[in-house]
Length: 110
Image (cartoon, rainbow, N blue to C red; front, side, top):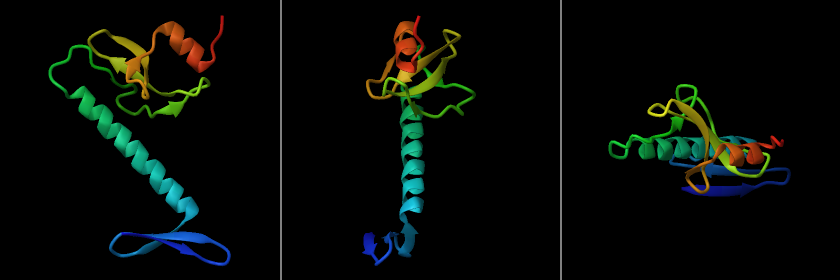
C-alpha cells in the first residue's frame, strides 16, 4: 500500500505494511535501487536462457551498471566469454552495439 502525504513544507510517501514515511530524496534512492535490481534480474534471466553460446554478461565480474550514454541510450558494458570480447549492450533495443555505433553513442568521434 502506498499513501502520499502532503505537508506545508514537504511531500512524503508512506509505503508498505508498516507505513514508513519516506521523503522525496529517500523515495528517489529507493526507485533507483529498484530499477537497478530489475535490470540486473532481467540481464540474469537473459543470460540463463538455454545454452546460448553468444551470451553477454555485465563486465567486471558482473559489477558493471547501466548508464545513459552521450547519445542518450541506456547502455551496459558487457563481456562475452565465448568470444572473449567486450561490447556495449543497448538496453532499449536489446542489441549489442557495433564498435562504430558504440563510438558514436559514447561520443568518441574520429
